[in-house]
Length: 192
Image 1 (cartoon, rainbow, N blue to C red):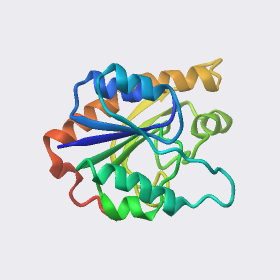
Image 2 (image 1 turned 90 degrees about the vertical axis):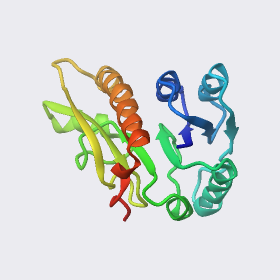
Image 3 (image 1 turned 45 degrees about the horizontal axis):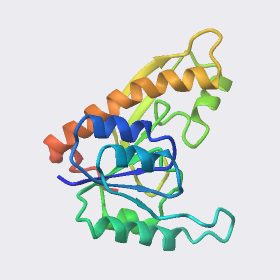
Image 4 (image 1 turned 60 degrees about the vertical axis):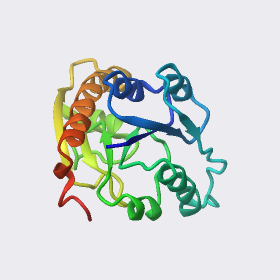
């Protein structure tokens, strides 16, 4: 199985995935970021498909087609989102139906979206966590592959809680990807 990892930031998830020696053939980023250096340090090709527009005129499907072209030209079987900051449009889910996975810093279906950790704190929950799920056109709504709880501690702020979630996330995501690579049938029946 040939994996692509999509990243946008510091590359900590990408580093965990590459350190685990999963079969990554390409990393793809949507902006210049540290993930480029992380991929290079592991000897993995990294492609920049730069997103130039962030306003209301952003052509999501047009941008997504550029990403899909880059992945299809490398014969990718599974797409792994690792902190990729751009929500992909329909062409990605048409090209890779049921074969895009993502991680989210909450116990879905609770606290969907970009501000999950802050929302969990604001809600006063005692437990949150992380979820690995199949990505769908509906953000943070796909079938759940794995979850793990993380307690909210007294005195936690967004940074401290998010860091503890990330520690669990790096392990859980790698374990889940490894399971999917070993048994691709785990993704059967997850297409929406």
